[in-house]
View 1: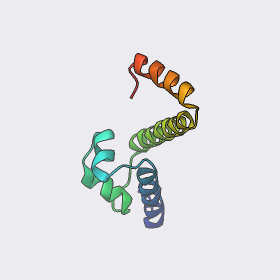
View 2 (view 1 turned 60 degrees about the horizontal axis):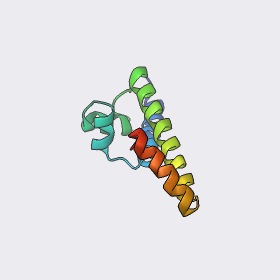
View 3 (view 1 turned 60 degrees about the vertical axis):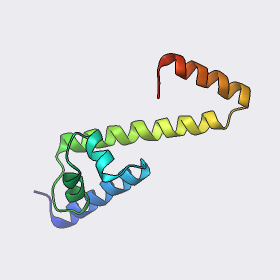
View 4 (view 1 turned 180 degrees about the vertical axis):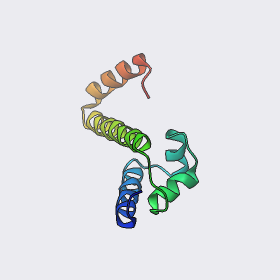
Length: 95
């Protein structure tokens, strides 16, 4: 079992990542296939997040961060290039 300070620090990381992804407790819980109360307990340092769950959170955060960065880059393109990229993305069934 992790010590209280370590649980609190881990919980702060969970909360930070959730907010960076723009997700509510409910949204993150759904993405991680758990209950929002479980996520709340992680964030408040009341429960220890298992390694598998933490790995899933990290992978979700990385995926969301990369997607957001890519979308930002697309928005910065010229209208013609942006339209071309959006057509390609729509054709791939992404979004």
